[in-house]
Image: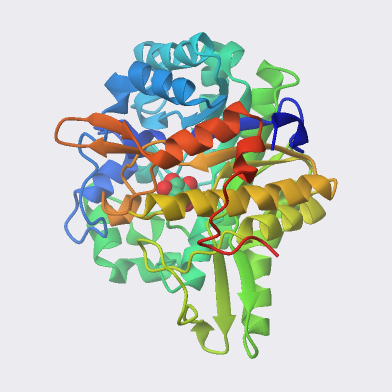
Length: 429
Ligand code: BGC
């Protein structure tokens, strides 16, 4: 098919994403670095040098552009920019300014996340994402960032996946309420080191509580308003973890409850934003007892989860219907060593985006997770989501076939995604 048969609108962003802590290395003033090194840590290994993107960003950004992409989503590390409360580092702001300038030089639109799970260690000591002062602290940081970098930011994402902890809890992972935290070795160790009560240990990625919901929503809105005030007209939103929540017979009630708690209330809270970022990897199916096992014939990813690219079409639909605002796909991808499978996953997911556009949904971009193999949080460096492989001993980068394939899709405005389908994974119905 030729480029003029594609249904993707002009200005549609085709990009790749990373997040600071997962790629930069040595984010030593951050809460996550601190948690990685405590006794009882739940991190498989520490982030260490990561892929040294902090120093290698120029070559990395050039490579992303050369592959054909038109946008780069990355995050700023608050712990570098404000290493002590109220002390802002001009040198670190300048670092991010150089990154943004490198994107401009190579024609990449910039999609910037202000907080991708990771916060300064001092914020954790101050009660983190449950403390009533955190929204004002976050807004002050957003204001400083915009004053220094705003002219080079095209799309602003406030918080990344504020809803993730509730999704994780529905899968049986973490989510201790404040009074339960003393019993968890990692939170107990963190509290002792920080000199606070265990009930007050509230990092963004793992905190499930009503206060956590309220604080994140208030932070998002105050941050959004600060960003808009600094640069009227800039699109601002948050990005959500949108699993396609489904039920098999007997699991309907549980699925409804999880869908409401994890997806719907966050989408409702997005009304009034300029867009919502959709981050979908697959589906979560519930039966009467909890999460249903993957179908016996399912092909699975590095974390043992069923590969289900059809989820993206469903979650875009859900977001548009509930939030009623434009959508960017800010993450979508697959952890696998089988790169041919990754291409078929991406192809099927992109077909879902195309179907949404044909249905009249205002989807403005598709940003794949992730540019490089990187630090996958508690799983360490095991899972490989990257389009570009990295040898961490030499820091050598090697684009995988999927990087060339998706780059060509980007270059042709979506047309190349329709050519040569293998259908190793099912196309969306
Ligand atoms: C996050 C990324 C993460 C990815 C894959 C999302 O939850 O935003 O930081 O690496 O999913 O698990």
